[in-house]
Length: 132
Ligand SMILES: [Zn+2]
Image (cartoon, rainbow, N blue to C red):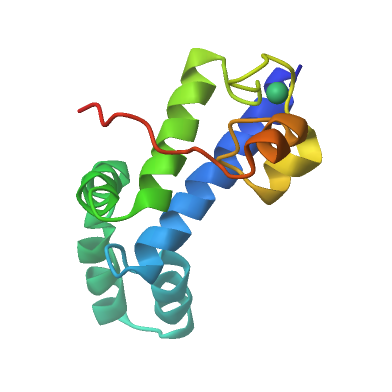
């Protein structure tokens, strides 16, 4: 069983992965990049620009995610994984209810089966009936 601490670690990894993907797909701008630019440049203009740029907050992020997830399977899988974290079912095999190996979760954040069940099936049946 994953401890709360582990769960929050995985949650952070999943959120980071989601952001990375959104940035890669062009739905989000790279925040650390603009921050670094603003910090290296001096003067009031940079500050004003910086303030205007703060619109990319959690809400924007959420909107970008919902939009992008319609087209990107991995993104929606990451969303599912976050739901499972909220449900308390993250890291539990959906087939046999055993714990999924932590190393496996690290390698595949969206894994739903532990390695034996996955191998038995021979593929990752991540597809599930779409729910809105
Ligand atoms: Zn299993």
